[in-house]
Image (cartoon, rainbow, N blue to C red; front, side):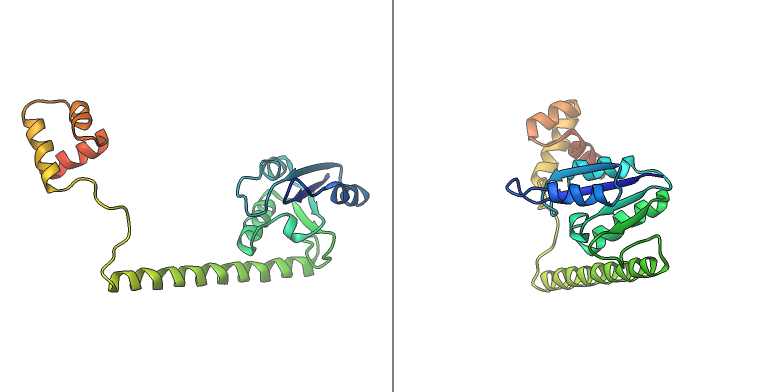
Length: 185
């Protein structure tokens, strides 16, 4: 049962050594640290840390915002830790400690907030889609193959040209050619 620390600062001008020192003082045996923005979805040291921790370990951070970029991100990470049997503690916020009943309650509340945020985002997205449709706009990529191009593809296929050669001739992928031929055959 190890205590594993994670320290992060957002910019190269900042220094995570203060976090590392605090984590060490509070018993962190192994510490992962990196200089990455919290908004950056690719945080390799966090990924290594989450892979490293084992059942019975505790992940320790100095502040909540050092670990997650949003409530939903925090909930995803803490759920992953719980699934592995790993506890989670925040030094600057004693209420966030999944080894206690109160800490588990706080994480449950954060989970509800994350779900609420997701629902609001989805609702706004659906409103935007409905508005766009009402204005005559449809989502998705514009079609690259029109009726004229479909006729050309069919003509080239009737002249026994291979799908690969048709794709080169027309300037689209082989998969697109195959889809057109399936629809028109």
